[in-house]
Image 1 (cartoon, helix red, strand yellow):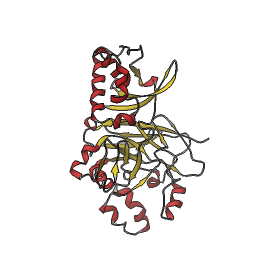
Image 2: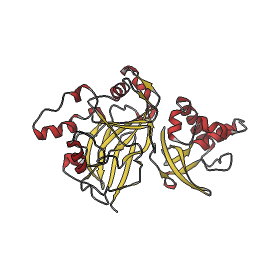
Image 3: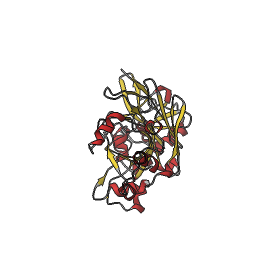
Image 4: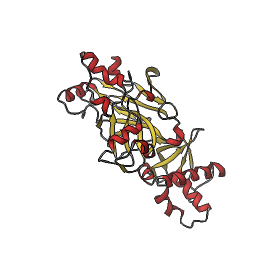
Length: 327
């Protein structure tokens, strides 16, 4: 499934819901659809089960595990069979056009954000410029930094230019969402912990980032102002071969960067194995791939400007779009 967090206006206010995105440009409200299914099956209190099995919050939904996915799929099949005009038990709409709703970050506040650096071309650039060999540690283990999980933005949302930078940059990345808790996970079992994938744009204030990291700490202010994810999460059963997906970044419709996740030096499974070593990973942990080779303005010597529309597209996932604004 393609799972999205979205806001919809109702007579009693605006609410954030969990939805399944359909190929015709519609989105099914999974919690309301599941309540409708249970009512049809004779459940006298259908909403009582919704909170436990198909909650309207992405974080709680992922934490609910495979049962939630199974029941959500049943709800989708029910709506498609009964018709998209079928009302919910309280007369609510079950299906909306994507144009009627506002997409949110699929995980508005993930449990954690770890962003790796896994594409050798991107990694080597800084060392090649200096004429020195990069550290061997990068080849031995997947290296990452910890980002700010409280600063997520979603598809269609504006990115406000940080007041302290003159060099704002994008990064073309893919992200994996952890689906269940684990510790000391063998690499051959790591695939069982992957819930799905999404696009990730690790926006960067390059000038302050370089200053921070010259002191051998960070990045902090250079990254923590915003990370974009979306437009939705695609579950592993639908995304296809997640080791081989084309990726592209466009600025104002012009392709600036292309890549493929097959060029990652360490695999998604190796990332899980490494992070879970003597450490517990949890549902809704986000693991970013890092930037593809030539996947950012720093490598191209091209920089974002106010008003730019930044689009990241990943095969079988979708397009994540954000507009840069400077107030």
